[in-house]
Image (cartoon, rainbow, N blue to C red; front, side, top):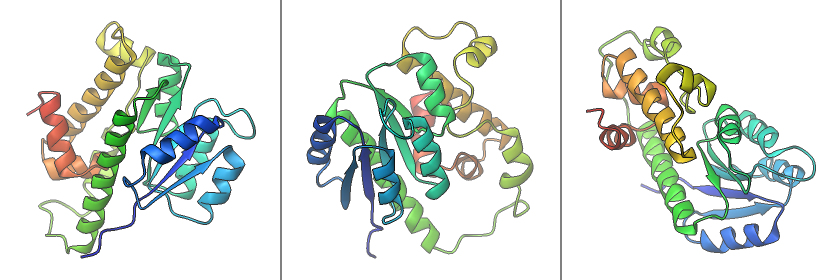
Length: 224
């Protein structure tokens, strides 16, 4: 079985970042393309399907990074994206998550960390592509159970309310940005598990992740 193509796009107005990531991610994807601004990125979106996009929050011309992210999800729904910036803060992270970012990564970038994120996204893409080729066994509930009532009970899979919403719900916000993002993710998964009766396949479908990814994250956050 031929593996599904996996393409990455890097959007940053700093040439050094674009060149460095393009070289550093060589071999991690079938295609690593770069764009200096939103207009160039949108042109590429019209020519190629991208499955993972790295977008600079502070694009200096045309659309902002968040506006581009929103356009990307409209043009290529289901693909993953992370937002990078030299100006990290909880508020910026919240904006990125609400716009649909999978994660928020402050500069200076750790290339090994970015590579790992790309590898995880590629594995997810491969597993989802393979699962779509295999006939699914009948579910033990109504066909639209997860997409309907249960789905309406769940927070957004792109990481819930953070910042003030998280603080009001669960006490003071963690000191570090990474801890804040992780707590948002833990809460999202825990609520999804509860809404789906701890049925892992239904929970993974509701969160739009693979069962394998769900199992890993449950172990990471001690949710077994």
